[in-house]
Structures are given as structure tokens and as C-alpha cells.
Amino acid sequence: MKTLLITALLMLSFSSFSQVTFEKAKEFMQKRCSDLKMEYVDGRSFKYDEKTTLYVFLTKQSENYCVSMISQYALEVMSAKCGGASKKTEYYDLFK
Image (cartoon, rainbow, N blue to C red; front, side, top):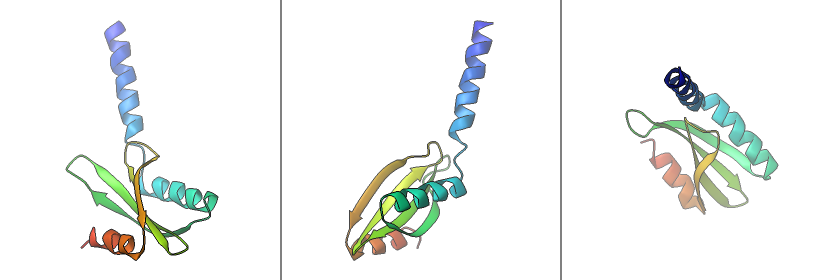
């Protein structure tokens, strides 16, 4: 019985990890931009490997751009790199 309960809890937790869709990630990033007085520029889905999808976003504040990543497993920014116009170029180079 104890093993069955643990297995059920693990299945629930793993299924909740995969619940982040691109649309949810985009909404999250747009709200984050609004809260931080940034401009949402673009967002796309990027297949990292056969099991992992990353959602990559380009944002702007003044003359600086940021490339941020959210995974399919958690609705939080995993990493962000900011800089000048070169970050915008790096973002679009990911999808060539």
C-alpha cells in the first residue's frame, strides 16, 4: 500500500512538471516584462534534446536585449543573458 501511494505521488508530481506549455510560458514572460517595465519582443519553442523543450524569449529594455529560457518542467526563468544588440542576433541565430 505504501509503495502504491509513493508511486501515485511520483506520477502526479512528474505529470505536473510537464504541464508548462508554450502559451503558459509566453503569458508568464509577458507579465514578467510588464512588471519589470520591459518590452516583450518575441518567443519561440526550441527542442533542446529528444525529451526537453525550452521556451526562449527575447525582451528589451532601452537599448538592451535579454534572451531568457523557461523549460517545459517549471514556470520560472532558468537563465537569462542580457546585453546590447548582439543578444538580439544571438536569439534569432538559435532558430536558423
